[in-house]
Amino acid sequence: MSDLLGVIFISIGIIFNILGCLGLIRLPDVYNRLQSSTKCVTLGTCSILLGVLMFFGFNSIGVKALFCIPLLFFTSTVGAHALARGAYWFGVKLADKTKIDEYKDLVKSAKEGGTA
Amino acid sequence: MKYLVYTLIAFGFWLLFTFNLSIQNIIVGLVISILTVVFLGSYFVADVGKLGQPLRYYWFIVYVFIFAWECLKANLDVAYRILQVNMPIEPGIVKVKTVLKTDVARATLANSITMTPGTITIDMKDDTLFVHWIYVPSGNPTEYTHQVVGRFEKYIKKIFE
Image (cartoon, rainbow over all chains, first blue to last red; front, side):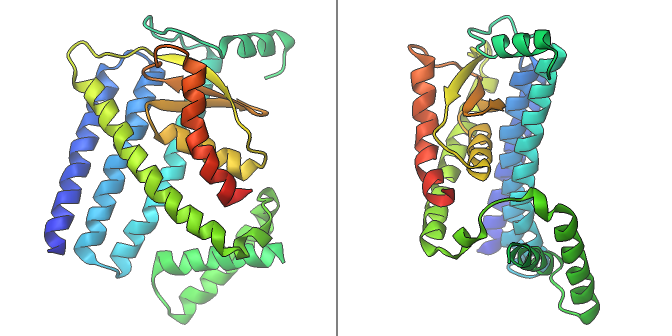
């Protein structure tokens, strides 16, 4: 029973990882690519780790897999934020489809004022 | 007192992570937790008294389930957009205000936003969050973002403040 659950979770994880990588190739700019790579890939990897927990139960391997989930979670979100902010301040353009940009004024005034 | 609590948390984490109760492991774990807290404890300024209030844990568990459901919906949404041939995306950056005060609560809110419906927190200046949407909602985007943020704020306020 738990083997079956493990296989199901790992399959879901692999599907989400594939979708995340597909998004990384297809989406137009840095920010949208970060969306797909943080959301799909993090959930996919969390799902794979849960599958590992189901396979092995609460022994040394399973508990390590369980504890990797919050670590992965915080590092990937903070990493995505840092990359997006860094890209914006460096001057990477938003895609042509972009509708509104309310962040522009702040960056502009900070750059002219000389404080980053 | 604060540093003692941090050391205990770090040590508990070490024990669960290594899953090994031999003497060497416990000694190494203690030394490493103490060193970590000595060097990094001063950066972590949350009020440890809050750790002893059980109601916060109850809301934390409720929040984890709500968050997992939102996270799953967000993933299906992004996956759906990627798989479309013409990719129905309308990206944009929206600014939104938060009512949360403490740093830990704000960081949690920003992380939650990054993981849910097609949004990434790009920057935070005082109480203003800048959120990148993969699909800016039609109508009044600021109003809609307020709703999304408000749903998490309610729980985070109960957990951390």
